[in-house]
Length: 272
Ligand SMILES: [Zn+2]
Image (cartoon, rainbow, N blue to C red; front, side):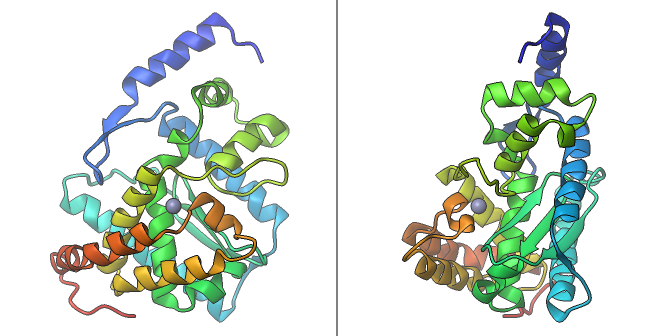
């Protein structure tokens, strides 16, 4: 694909303005394609995904996904507001859907568009386990990891089409998008998040689940169950989020911090 010079200049302009401090990590985040362009693409891809999959409604599980998702979203908003970032998620349009699929997977696209696959529920096992997965996925979105997973060339390609968001009619760009955000693809190879992104998402996710009122140590138990799944063919979720003993140890070590953070918001009991 060829880009006109003016498009490239526009794109470079976007690079300059889009560097900001991530309120969760305190790090400078380079958002190569700004949220104002990524979010409409995400919303479109999300609708596309839902229209191609069987969304589960009005079951105990689908209600649990929505309820846990709302609590995690509220926790993120409270945390950000308390830390001087009120309005940071103003452009988010939170949505939580359970999709009928044997795949072990879950993801959150930019803008708070979440999908949980029924195939992951036997591993999350209970509401707190689900909160651990959803907290982790929301953390990836908040920390902008999906975009950082794309190569410069892929970002440029997306940035160039962002003005006229017709990803559905553009398989190549849709593929980039889906791969970066963990939607799973029939042809593409799912890229794992980097170890540092995984660590970051674990840490942020743990704080979110604690503020949402869930026992954070359940996250360590969840990853132990994930690790047990690694024997044989590892599920899609583990190919993008590899489990490890280090991860489990880190999470265990952060539990007191997550609870202390939650207490600042008046949360003193934690559902397990
Ligand atoms: Zn992850």
